Image (cartoon, rainbow, N blue to C red; front, top):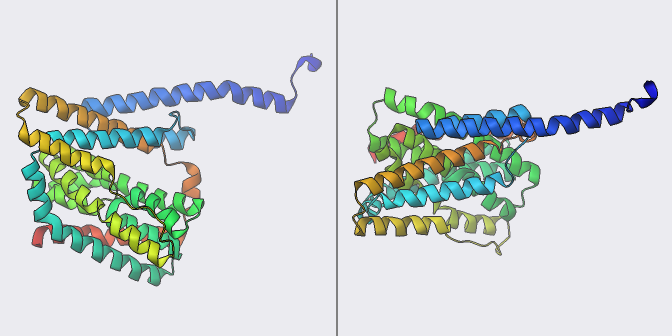
Length: 327
């Protein structure tokens, strides 16, 4: 009877409530499949693509505090990788590429400033994008956002651009490296400069090879340290000298792990086991990070910021390769 049927609004809410658990279950199953496939194939790109499709397809993130968990997973993976390296090697690689990293960071910031003036980009968004491209992607953007007074929509938009470029790099750089016949060391150093975030740098290099991952991790963490002077300079330019500057603890733990790995012979089986766990955690990190790009962030992208972010990145990708090959 009509009197026993719920009102249209009630019916709609009832259907929504019934669909929500099913949607979350489907999202969880998809995420587990993506993570399982990524670990089995030792390919973080599988997990990243899975997380991205789940978030954009279902428009939900089934994992509470997924970004925090992804960050912890990534940092743990990097620290574990340090055990498979020797401290002497970390120092040698850092010394070999120190000037190259410095040249890349300074030239990228200069190019970002010039391109921002050319496209008449918003000052705050331009600062965030140039800094993220020069140093460490979303980490630099999140660090500088309160320093430069960025609004939430500016933080979301610039982070979304960086994230999309990371995804493009993850799927294309290994093929480009193979086509150019780059050595493991050259490829690792290249991606350490040319890709924004540490997670995507390590993941892309790991797809190319273990040697590339080792070089990329060391060079990228050296590049990340440039965030400290950059944040200090930004605090002066934007009149916020109270900004807190500090070295990310996981970088210090990575160095300590490398020292332990160089001082103690852990044996081949232990080293391989640590390497496998590190790669598995990296896959998990990429899957969880992939869940962070939502439809709302995509809708907030402004044309000038997209042009600046993409244009600057396309300019520095070949620049990074030239610096690695000829410095």
